[in-house]
Length: 333
Image 1 (cartoon, rainbow, N blue to C red):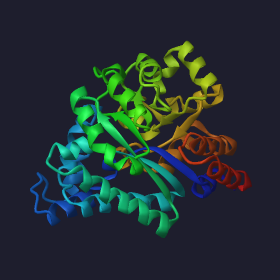
Image 2: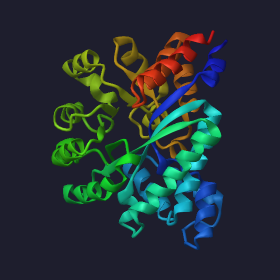
Image 3: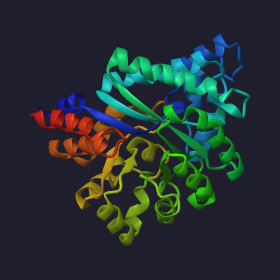
Image 4: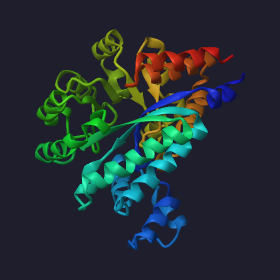
């Protein structure tokens, strides 16, 4: 089996994807029309042009504007279902999706509307596509600690539908330490915890996520390489990094995919995984990310298998499920 065939055939788990970041222009335009919401675009092509941006903040501006058309439970269902169909195409058999309730509750959309639409799609994905999924609620780090506490309280009645909490949005200037108390309360409530750190922000943010937030895994973390002591710790603790190659390229974390450090991290023993982040904005879903790094870095089939295995090992599924998928990966020639 050649490299491309392997990427298409190998089962994968996706651990870093923002469901609002899977909003394709066609669906955004359709939902805007359905909900009779005026958006500053007259066609799908104009929406696609608006998806051209150059840094994290300009992306976030478009991201939040697009989310504004999501109002009803069916909208959130349609958004998630479209993503699950992409998963089926890319042999993503398990996904742990981020969602940003504050993006919607701040607009007057009820928390229940968001979670019920997403959960219904998760249920259908399992029964109709055989794809398992879990939901991770993220706090928007550019907002206050107080607002994060409010969002955590809103989430508590839905604890059985939310596996963990995370931290996303603008990284620079909003260190993990800002949310130390919120994460402590989330852990006390029984949530697993993850956090974006070390993408645009420095390696110090990764230290804070580990020591103050006590995360189960780091989202991004590619700048950890700048700190040898941090690297040693990540390797010793087998701390997963959910790396997003096409996102890193689009946001100029790297200037060329051939410069990406995911292969170096892998060879040093860091538990790296491949993910799509905000695929409708960053140019590709899971297989697109695998193909991009495989070609740019000349990944071997064994390295591709290791990355796929890492995704299951870093996930929040049972050990029995992890073993099942790892056995399927081993069986691929």
